[in-house]
Image 1: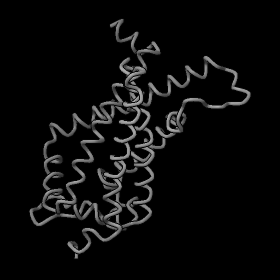
Image 2: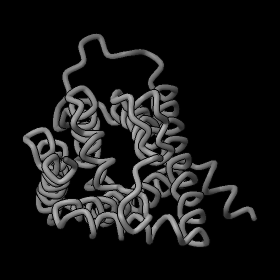
Image 3: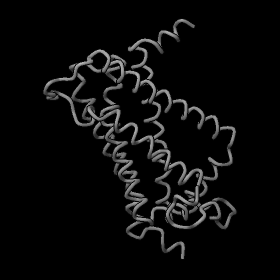
Image 4: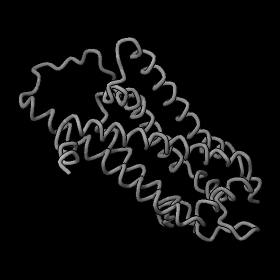
Length: 234
């Protein structure tokens, strides 16, 4: 019991919590993208995938609870460490000149909170399917495919056909990937695995992964804005 208490109280423990929770959330981001990209395989594939998730409640809800817990732990540890850093330096620099730090690393906390707001909107938009925020006037819950499943293909095409929604999605994903570009490499540092030998490789790999994730996620709204899928809904 004292071990867990020390982990939550110590700065090192908070860094471990932030690193581990961030790693697991990053894996979810990758898995979520792989699932979403099935929209390019056609309606049958993405609808079947969505139906598989929605009908396995015994798996879906535990995963959701775990993800919420990871997000809470990640935000809490990041905020706690930020407050500790400010308390350790109560007087600001007379002239702050960042050396050896990237824009992503200097804006981690800010981008993290913006990404959190984006995730809330995204969940309300496509998971809870709140009608009055999708900016289309249509009820996503009423979209049913010929097999009686939720028509996720139509929901994604209609949802991303709105330019404002797609723009906000692209912005949110961009900030998420900016956050990941630094967070992925700093995770190894928190775990003690990032040394002078591997630092450049890990930093470069983190940026490459972030760019690939960004391109993968925005490919969906961009393709739909360019006309993908609309012919199938006529």
